[in-house]
Image (cartoon, rainbow, N blue to C red):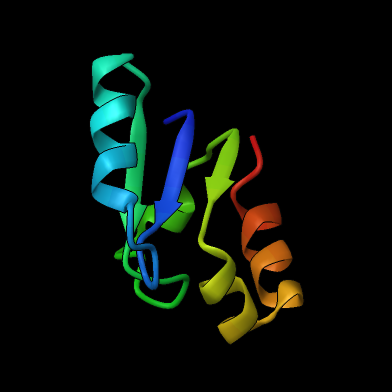
Amino acid sequence: MSDVHLITAKFATVNRLKEILQIRKISFTSSESIEQDNGISSQKCETLITSEQYLNKVGKEAIVSYAKSRQS
């Protein structure tokens, strides 16, 4: 289980956030989108991070549903 999952689509500063998480030794996974998570969705996490632009693109309901599928 990782603590954090990042959705990287439309997330301009995701690389900087990844650096911060690595420096602080916070376990995380990432995927380009909720549709292309390469089996990561079977892994559980505590926190899902996405950009507001991606949230607006796919819709709040899709993000909430995806987040619920990843709850530990």
